[in-house]
Amino acid sequence: MEKKIKIAVDAMGGDHAPEEIVKGAIEAVKEMNAHVILVGQQQAIEEELKKYSYDNTKLEIVPATEIISTDEVPTVAIRKKKDSSMVVGLNLVKEKKADAFVSAGSTGALLTGALFSVGRIKGVERPVLGTCLPDKHGFTFLMDSGANVDCKAKYLEQFAKMGSVYIENMYDVKNPKVALVNIGAEKEKGNALTKEAYELLEQTDLNFVGNIEPRDIPFGKADVVVCDGFVGNTILKLAEGLSMALLGVIKEEITVGHYKLAAAALKKPFGHIKKRFDADEVGGAPFLGLQSLVVKAHGSSKAKAVKNAIKQCILFTEADIVSKIGDKL
Image (cartoon, rainbow, N blue to C red; front, side, top):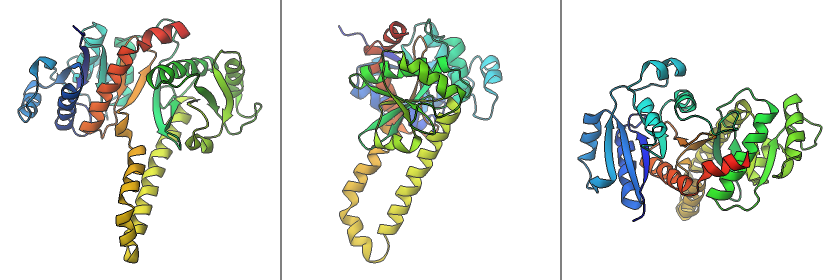
């Protein structure tokens, strides 16, 4: 009999918890061969579960009385709130009672807790947060998107290796192209960090294609792009804001006056465009380099994103990415 993969989910994390988190978990157990563990305040979770019919052998509740909010200091919250949904969920992974963990809660607390509870793969100096950025052909995997704001060149080399393993095995991209984010395409461009990282990446067995300027990322010129977390998070936030602004301006322009008829005709293609830029299709950002997968879902995640984050955990576990990253490093 095929073994069910166990995914722990922080039922209390995010702007729409627990309603949307529970709904996403229900959709996941209906569609996938997974066992979901909802971690959080039991009464609140049970009230939401009453709204649905589902196979109760594929879903369980692990009680946790506390919630870590986004305005708390991450290290303090993780240390003091031992019975929070986040800490209890991470400990389930640490104790091998779950294969992966998903949370839409505080990013800082999740990364801090994951590092201390789940632990790093042997040889990994810094775990990294990866994000799928939409591009002309599909998406580009951005690493680091916010976990390590200060980096050494060696970290960037490892980020590139972990990202290459992830993309090749999760999305079947053979020999993925890896690029280093820089202010120019020439090898000699950049600061001390990027120049040293370039030298290291040249010596690896990766398909390293050199530097990439941020403006070229949306054109899909690389499968994996590497930078420190400060630069990566800035790129991510700009991309999110710019895409929302552009879609809003386009909608505004074509829904006024005599363009309304054209807007009706364009509804379907614009729907396709919106889907391609929808972060909910991926579900969340994987925190790579840990002994098990931890996925950071967006704080505004709804059911669709939660379901797809759980799906990502299943595919990750089935592909044995942890062992493959260990081998690569």
